[in-house]
Length: 75
Image (tube, rainbow, N blue to C red; front, side, top):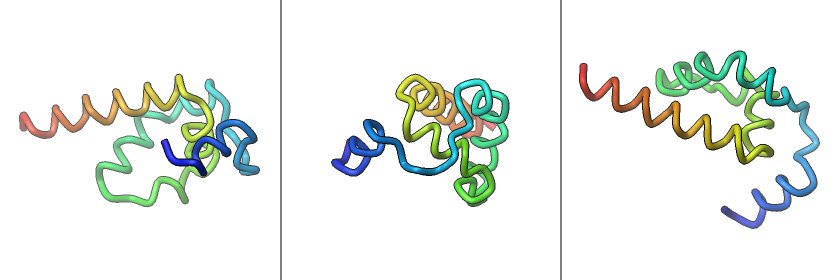
């Protein structure tokens, strides 16, 4: 984790934050869009901000990316 990431986690980024419930509601769509090459940080800025600020949701995000990537490799 970089210094900027640590500061944002401690102080917040100043961006709107979707919260755990809001982020989880669209996390699959967020990951699918990212893997398809879309600019999900622009499409879902509040979710991107939340993933940066919430270690638990960041872990869920990374796990879903790994799972989706593994599924693509099997196809």
